[in-house]
Length: 162
Image 1 (cartoon, rainbow, N blue to C red):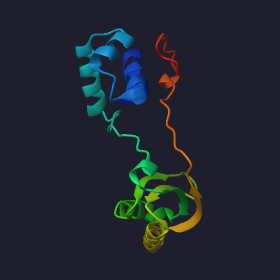
Image 2: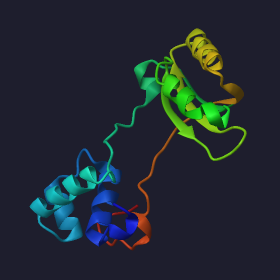
Image 3: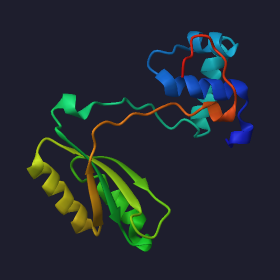
Image 4: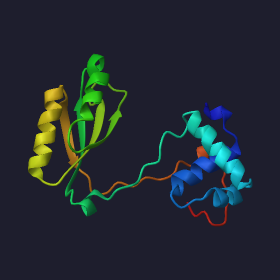
């Protein structure tokens, strides 16, 4: 389902799910976008079936879980081996996300967590063993995510301050 196939109701639903999928009920979303809760439920099902919504993920404060080390690792892998290497990263302890970048160098961004320096070093060693050339590692202070700005359309709601 391409973006041009989304109407303002779909876009409003997506915005509100990004903002707070856990606490936004189909009833409250329907009130905010001007349709019934059953319409919202049907639209969400279609968005999921069409691949627009591929999952619902909690935001985790890794420090609160005892993972005192939270890093952003930038690495380079050969383009020809990128898919195989990224698939291998799933098995590296502490890897929580991987972004493939459209560059020749520094073409992977890897979010990594660990309880201590030893765990991080072990994970970095495993990444190197997969063929990743580590370019840079940055200690993350905080990660914040924001809902996309309603896909370029104005979303007016008195309760919406974002």
